[in-house]
Length: 319
Image (cartoon, rainbow, N blue to C red; front, side):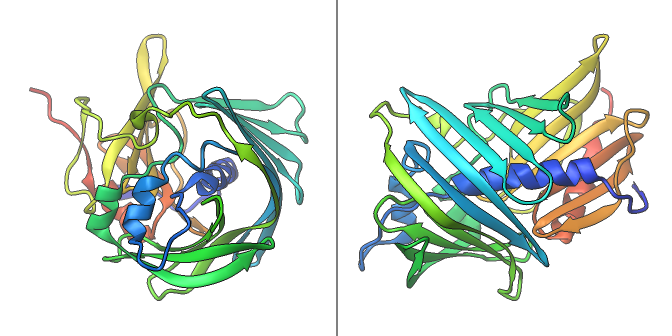
């Protein structure tokens, strides 16, 4: 495996951060816990809540010395979910998500619209309590106020060094995550997202989201690539491919341990240059050449975890 020299990949990083923000806003809903409640039981009860809540507000996303502000409008009507994100600082950009379709608009390039569709992808967020409990511990830390609302603080602590920790501030009334802090191995903040103002309009209708649209399970991939020896807890949940003239030129795989998500892109060598190593806040990007293909791993995980994914990626031998 030959690792390429580091090379700035602005588009990859920007899209990864926007996708991270979208997933962060939907990650791991919690209920208002009582003194005797188990955090894991709270997670089990509240899988529907965050998607079926209609709300609008402003939030800040901070990593290192960078601070971005965004506006969000999230709506649930008759089983359909729509979300609108607009930057309030820096270059003007908008992201619109309609169920499983996401479109990004760049105001600096009026003709530029990028759209992504997820076939057979239940949602951009994954949540599986059983898998989480295998690699994370949970603890209620106390109470705090965020955006003028009372929240319960829940610590999601990894049991190994292959993933980050999370400190979640959950609205006691609605179970909406109002603040999320990503923690490194020493428990120091890497990044955080926090609402500064929010208006919760209403709960959505009573139409239930099908279970497979909330927490996707592992898929049965039988293609030409193998991924043996992945870090504990990570399973493949999404596989997509892009073709040109009937030939597969690139593939995307999404792996998750229940909270952390990593995307692995495999392309022909003449499609694009793979980045080397880059870290932007909690998002790591690592590229290498594997069996004659360019492989890039992007995700909210330590670089060592991304290296583990690259080492686990191999082209199957032809029968």
